[in-house]
Amino acid sequence: MNNLEKLSKIILYDDPSTSNLKLQDIEKYLKSKLDNIEILIRENFFDFYLNNLSLGKSKNNTADETKSKASELSKIANGLARTKIRDLNNPAKYLEPLQGEIAFEEKLLAEPSKSVPGIFYDGFRLHELFQEFLTEMDINGSTCHIVFTPRLFGTFDEFDKRYHARVILCGYPSLISTIGLVEAPAKPKEYYAIKQRLLIQNITTIDSFIPDELKNRYLEYNDPRLTEVIKGYVMQVVSYHLSSSPFCDDPLCRLYNSHWQEELLRAQLSEPEFCKTHELLFLEFNK
Amino acid sequence: MVETGTNIKYASENQITNAIITEFARSFSDYSDLDVIIIGGGPSGLMAARELALKKVKVLIVERNNYLGGGFWVGGYLMNTITIRPPGQKILDELGIPYKEFQDNLYVAVGPHACSKLIAETCAAGANIINMTSFDDVVIREDNRVSGVVINWTPVSAMPREITCVDPVALESKLVMDSTGHDACVVNKLVDRNILKIPGFGPMWVERSEDLVVEHTGEVHPGLVVTGMAVSTTYGLPRMGPTFSSMLLSGRRGAEVAYELLKKS
Image (cartoon, rainbow over all chains, first blue to last red):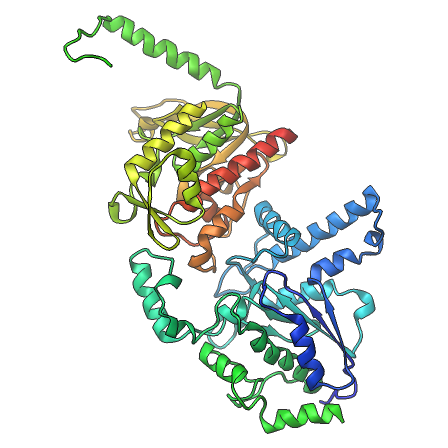
């Protein structure tokens, strides 16, 4: 399938909890790679939705309008709480969210600059939720929405019958998890050996025991390399929109679906940027 | 200062018994009109009780053991060094508990000193305490709201039923707080009654569990606030190692939530 003529606009939604995510740099990079394409940068996805509700546009909101915004926020929080994975080995296990789980999501929505600690969401259910809140004016085949989210999501693998954390989920919109970049690809084996030894001693402050040499081999939260790495994941989304396939089998291409942090750093930070096939794909788009 | 060798003044056995009964009965009678009943006198329950009492909220801790403090007396492997991660040391400062920095982001304190000081500060703030008393059941009112607890002497539950046919008593309150640790006794009573469903231990990662406990502290069901490790059981968060920051911070958060709920009621 080829969609080269259709893509004309990319909208990037910010994740304010990740201070090293520089969307202007990503915008510049996209413009350097893709000719004649409009790039828009927007605030956090749900903030954009809430701030553009038809009733909530006026600066002089009435009590009813404010209530409408509050009820939408509550609806989103409820939806997010429903997308939590309840059982790593059973995607069908569902439980009505507890009052406290919804309140937890409401707090996070009200403070998007706060990181989302330790919750694991079902990627497909989360994606459906984001799709539900795409503003109607932006839904068209020529626009690609890329949402940077601080939520960690996973998809269920029918092969080994368990959930696996993911960095990227392509679709409409596409999701890139800023926590997933750190948590989804596995760290070097030495890291887990140290972690295991410390946990036996009930020490959970692992970071201070990891040598710097080892730390350089994986991404940490708010890592200075984050934006550079994300550029490659954004190109995976672009590739998905152009060719229906986000990934490449070549471990040196930025479109490689890395399962290890060291693979990720090699694919994203070393030359060449793309394999011949994908180099050509983007060149053809620019013709 | 009392000099050694000073004769201790005389009081008869009758007078002593009378003093115990009279004072206990007076206090117990006063518990019929409570704002918050906290089940469990571990670090989060004590912290919540202290904070509420300082705000003049009428609060009672129900503790099933003779002693208060729960697991706060000892760290891991029964060793009485307790560990605290920032910002938990700020609470130690407030309570006047001495501690030292062990390494970056990790402080240590002597368990018995820390625990006894927390208990003393909670009592000094004006919290009421009833120990050797076990939580038996919840009092449920309209719309399944939790409105009190049913309690009994702890020894009753430890003896054969045919010997101890002792009916419990009920105490009513505006709010109940479950601070019973991993047992989450109050929450689980609602689960037993099919009023609440909880997820069980779920897929989350242990490094973030302290933050999660504090973040999830709050009202889990109308009239019921949950703090400390009971939060972990309620929301299926991972069990943690022996660091107590989240217990103290969760207690404080629980008190804030309870105070706001009381203001609205």
